[in-house]
Amino acid sequence: MSPPIDARYHGVWARTLLDTPDTHDTTTWVRWLQTGLWHGDLRVPAGVDRSTPEGRAQQQGFGGTTAITRPDPWMPEVCTWQRTIDFQPPRSTPDAGFMRFETPERVVETGVHGVYLEVWERLPGSVGQRIALAALDAAGQPTAERLLVSGQYLMHLRPRGAPWPASTQPDDTLAAVVQRHPEQAQALLDFEIAFGSWIDGVWAVERATLPALEGQRVPLAMRANGAALATVKAQGLPASWQVLEWHSADQARE
Image (cartoon, rainbow, N blue to C red; front, side):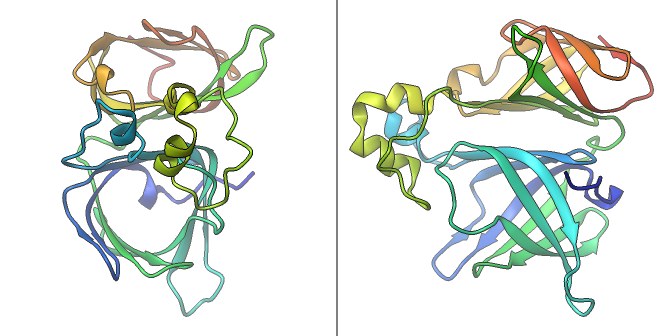
């Protein structure tokens, strides 16, 4: 596992621009939450009817660990998002970008394995406490489900249980897979990434891959039970979690 990354990257980052040879995008809603090691990312395109399987399949989101390297001392740092779970099918190339900080609150990413430019701006109130939890199954073993906190923001990531169809190829889109296998659409889209503020014990869901979750205000409390385990009290979330990272002034937050 990679070591924790520099504090410059901690927080929640909103993408304000994507430029590629074919695209100039300032409207897609994008949030990247970064703790000391773990990340979660959610991308919801504007103007898409997410009440349909085809619309929901156009969303993007993923989670895993983050590594910062500088392979060449004359080049910018490289940030690699090592995806443990992904809403979209697997990629053929790593998700990595050259990172150049214009200010402490604004970083420009350019492609290592592709031609693109993204501008990221850190949200106020998104630094301070950093928590990463992995849900435990009935046998007490950690799963791929994650709960991430950075400052006053919280993201929940629960991957689908269904495997990809055997015909799925690297760099396929979820929309194409769903079109080829409409009978599996419900299972393939059953993947939750939900993001929002967590203030005074209430998680206000702003955006989610499951649109029905948006706008919900969920009472949520979490408590560390020593260094390794945590308890979460919130409707729809497991109660028992493994602590992956816990940097907070208090051992409990309610």
